[in-house]
Image 1 (cartoon, rainbow, N blue to C red):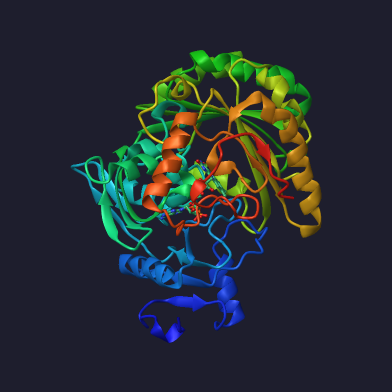
Image 2: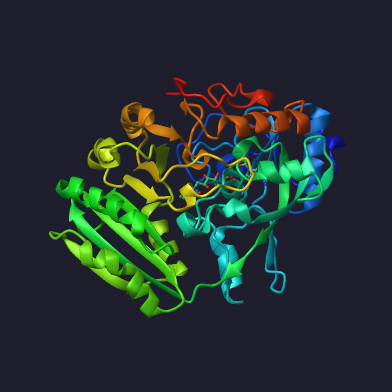
Length: 467
Ligand SMILES: Cc1cc2nc3c(=O)[nH]c(=O)nc-3n(C[C@H](O)[C@H](O)[C@H](O)COP(=O)(O)OP(=O)(O)OC[C@H]3O[C@@H](n4cnc5c(N)ncnc54)[C@H](O)[C@@H]3O)c2cc1C
């Protein structure tokens, strides 16, 4: 098909005719991870309207090639960049509207958590988007979404009420609990295997929480055993509106690896916050380097801290697992937390109970445990690629057998696959992919060699020799 046959109003950058700089910017300019993939779409559609998305999918059908999608560009493994696909870049498709009475926000998928909360906070409202300010709601919600106060408020995707999508065969349809409801089910946890292109999410929002305080304690990493066992032991009885995290990192100005328990509480008043944090403040082990107790915080401040911890312009390798509830979690994670390969890298344990102990609504997302563990390995120079990735692999060889499965959001199926869903949900999801996209038009899961196609993932443990 000649390029001239394409509607001239469609903003499209062709690989074979664009200025190479423009093509490169369109291909990876909005990809967060600087470890750029050697994969090349045939064209990138810089969609500004729903109609551009529709045209792009119809074009891919005419060309008989695949479609890939980019919302916020924060997939660690750059799932949006695929060989010989039409890449639909949604960065310029911008929409946020709020129905305060119905408590519903309608957003385009490239809207970030911070953009949405900036709009909502003016109305005294909020949404439990991702912790990092610039993660796109598109990829985040499809994967489930570990958003603000996830252990108590549940998965962000539970708040998806409806969607507007373009199907793989190029039709614009509405999806909700009554119409095309199986796609609504899939949107809550299918991740990059969702078999359509979403142009709008309709989300349930909540009232803004009036008070947020945090307590943070920094210990030298030599105290790992005691500190980690302490935070794990107090979690089951801790206030249920408090996020509980342990991170190992090298904080600027401290310049040594530390183990850092962090508690952020969301309450109706400062007094309630102080009461909630008391259990941590009064039982934390002695011997800390720094403690910050009952410190006033806000979403804006937390976004800033997260952005500092995940700097732009760096190379990243993320990995993760849901550690089994009945193992010695501190022991299983010890090597990961104490041997980080760069001073920017960090390891994270995130308390998921009580969310992990309740029955989840019927949706694709179905894998969880009380203990979420993730590695965020961060470095600047390409020369460190092999060393850093080898470290991640070595750690995961030991940790993975102690895990139930993993979260799609911090996974790379080119390297390792495991269970992302319970077996019954995985079977239903792969059937739905086949129903809605039998030709494999939408790229789907990027496994080693990009072979997964319509069949999707096996939902089994496997190392894929990705690097
Ligand atoms: C710095 C950083 C911080 C993070 N923090 C969190 C966090 O706090 N909680 C959490 O749960 N996760 C977090 N993540 C993981 C994040 O949720 C995933 O990487 C997610 O994929 C990012 O979404 P995106 O839209 O920005 O990514 P993209 O790379 O744009 O999208 C990823 C993939 O999702 C699919 N997709 C996206 N949009 C659409 C659409 N409109 N229609 C159909 N398919 C679509 C496509 O397959 C696409 O390739 C973080 C990631 C980074 C890099």
